[in-house]
Length: 328
Image 1: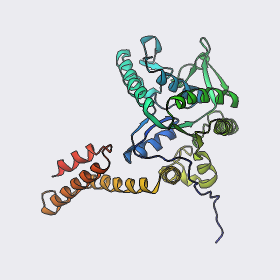
Image 2: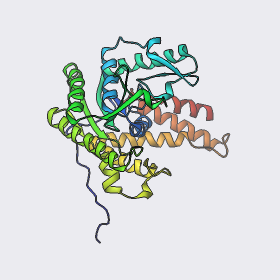
Image 3: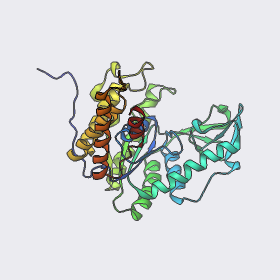
Image 4: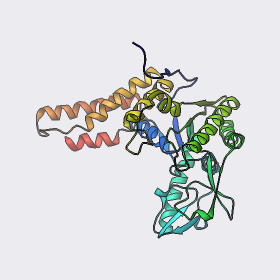
């Protein structure tokens, strides 16, 4: 039978990802998809400490500030628009009606994530666009324009050399302090069509070339082809959500499995399968919760968790334990 798809099998990376490593994911909304699956599989993972960030410069600013570790945000970093307070460095999900509440949220996330970065062994960066917006009065690159008037902002496209220069600098700083540090670079498969299909392709091409150059310059940086998997392998609108831009669950699951095959050892995948069985069992809704059969089921699950935790003490089954005890 001839193949009706452009398939390319996953190759093993030069390093692996295990539950003993600390992971940090920063970048576009596609980062959230991978982060959700890593968290469900009980990996120690932190995702987007400044919220979803699309362009490489804002991603670098996030990492630089976290790496310094003692630059909390102040009232001067905030501005008000339409009854909400915002930050140019953060996604709008941090925005609040009261500036004090917003600062508390920003700095709680900042402090926790700065500590995480100091322990991070595996960093996944997902670039969404090479186009940036700058404030005309200060030349600051903004992570999110928060629907501010277009007259305040100037748009331009980053050059490949700019991206490589800024990204390489912060990654080399981290690597110098953390010898086991490995970086996964990827380009989001989510298209940015507001400026048109041609402009989107040029932006994505810039990002792909920048990732190639970073991989050549940094031996600890590896490219993961999320963009190519959706656009060249799946390549059909049945793999998109209703907006015809974002990948649907089927597509994300497919890319996730490719990620698993690339970075996880067989032992890690076996552990993930055991964890998934426990998660599914915790989601079980019994028809007869007072029956002896159900009580035996709950006790068996608690014993499985205890045994697994003895072998892997860093795994956090607090939510599942609470669920089973509630059912007992």
